[in-house]
Structure formats: structure tokens, C-alpha cells
Image (cartoon, rainbow, N blue to C red; front, side, top):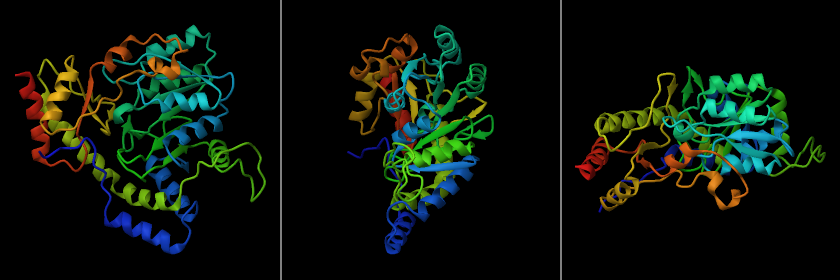
Length: 362
């Protein structure tokens, strides 16, 4: 049986050529290719600075550290995300505080975030807003809260390459933003991450932190890590970045076709695509009270699916000490199902996916 995969990274001759050039140069670790990739990615995001890292988690950790988040601080974030969002907060020594999500966007509910600030007497140091599945969080009210309480606003844009909010690219909306280049993302470097920011002080401290706290060849101003990106990864990233607009257009086209075909079904809710944002569709995530049955039917019909994420972070064993009130996140985790939407789908693939979803409920 032919399987339609949930993800299918597009790596070809151009990526191979760029990697070969780096290998031939002999500079395969951090070097000029990484600096060029940083400049190009910053320009794409309309940000002043970019710092490449080894993966999306290290980008989050380094960005929070560069903003001064540490022991005794609190960071409001979503309980409905990959665990790296909250883990990065804890890695700095700070405490993640979970606010519930909006039932349509699956992103942080600004009202719930405001209540969280009030419940902690304003003693919140940052908001980590996840752009889940490629849909930007509602940044404007979150930024207003951050300004009111003198907190930092950080974008977890690990899934949102190419998305925009009110006409502005993600990566340019807060004090810092963090991307992942894992193979399933909208663009990849194999493994890798990136921090974007308009703040020179944040970029400088992040670059120092990911390089052993180095300030000069063998001067180390602070304790740091080796979170650097390799030139090989950056070479792949440069080729992928050139293709990113095409990839996002294809994802959005596939998503529109799926939504057109699934709209009107009472048993399925297609993803929400608000007018103020441009969804990048890292995932095309529907919602159904019969999620598990539908998933099994699709898998038996040769269509891969994914559940992102079946357990909210505050219910994970590593977070059993955390007390969170997030009923919307908990219900959402029981009902979401992601369908293939990647750029390598054919028109027939998209029609087949929709037809099989429809046939399950007939």
C-alpha cells in the first residue's frame, strides 16, 4: 500500500552542492557560512540580528538567558506545545507558569495570560508565546501585557517559518524569537536553530553564551555552552531558505484545498485561519471527538497522521510538581489530529486525504 507521509523533507541537488562546497573549503564547523546564513535569515525575518544554534531548544535556552531570565524568574507559556518550550525555561533556572489556550487558535489565550499576571501580582518576567502549528499567536495583546508589566516577549517560532502577523514576519514581533530547523519543519538544516532579535545586546549575549561564554579567543566572560551551528548545517539552511517562500505557498495551497473539502462536516473542525495572520501550516490540524478512530482509519488507508500533542506539558511526569488550570488545553489534546500538508503532496494526495476523512464519517 502506498503511504502518504505526514512529513517529507525536500533535500536535493542544491543542498548537496552547498554542502560539498563547505566540505571542500575545510571549514565544516562554525565559520563564514554560518555568519552568512545568520545575515540572510535575519533579513528574511526583517530582524536586525540573528544567532544560529545547534537546534531549536538551544535557541530557546540561549535567548532566555540572553534576556536575563534565570533563577527565581517566572515565564508564562503554553501548556499545549512540545515540551522544549517549558524545558528551556527550566534550563535557565526560571519557572514556567502555564496559562490556558484559545480553543480556536490553540495558542496562548491573552485573557488567560492577563489572569496569570494578576494571580502572581504582576511578578512575571517574560511571556513565551508559541506560534503553534505555524499560526502566529495573538501577539498584540500579549505585547501590551509585556509592556504593562515590564516583561520580555519571546516568540517560540519553531513551527512558524514564513508566517506573518498583521503583515509582519514572525521573528520580528518580540524581544527575541526562536526557530527550529528539525527535518520535519517548514525548512531544515538537519538539526539546527536560530534566534532573531532587534536588540544588539541580546544578540551579543546569546552569541557569547552558545560559544562557551567566550569573549575573545580564550577569554570566557561567563559560563556558556557549545550550542553552535555547523557550517554544513548552515549550507543546507541557506539553500532551504531560498525555497522557503515556495514551500509555504504550497503548504497554504494544500491547506486551502483540504479546508474547502472538509468544511461543513459536523464531525471535523478544520484549522482556524484568522484574517490578521498568515498561517504557515507546519501542521494541518483538525479536531474531532472521534480523533483516535479517525486516526486508525486513515492509517489503515495508507495516510500517516500525527497527534501533536497528546499530553499537555503540565500533565507530563517531568512536570508533576506543577499546578496548572488549563481545561481547554486538556480537551484539545484529546481531539487534535494532524494530516499531511507538506509541499511534496500531489493534488491527488490532497483529494485522497479529504475523501478518506469524509468516508469515515459517512
